[in-house]
Length: 122
Image (cartoon, rainbow, N blue to C red; front, side, top):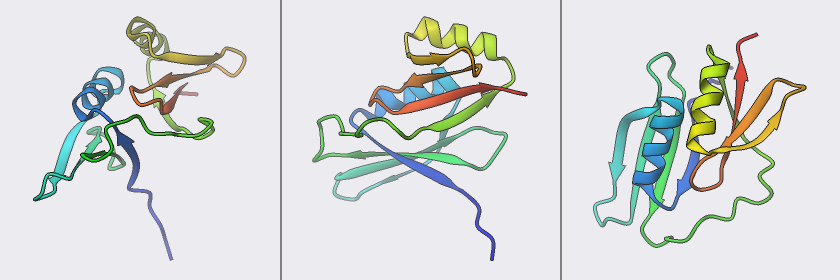
């Protein structure tokens, strides 16, 4: 029996803001979306062209407030082929929330507070 990771879900309070952030910060673009007939939810799958893994952004009409994501002890990691350029971009965006120079990594935070780890190719 084999399993393959296909997506991770993040609930978002402002879908347009989240989509803009993920495109600007990580180059992820919309692959497809589902809209409830009654307008109660919108699900947008975003990803890159180089693999099949996606982030599922879910907007719920009846949940306009920010989500309580606990103590932010979980994250999704992204490897970049140009760590210095990525760091510069994220610094300019003001989204770096934690750096660990000894490990050579840093984290950015999306508009809803989810942490995303940035690591260089090794």
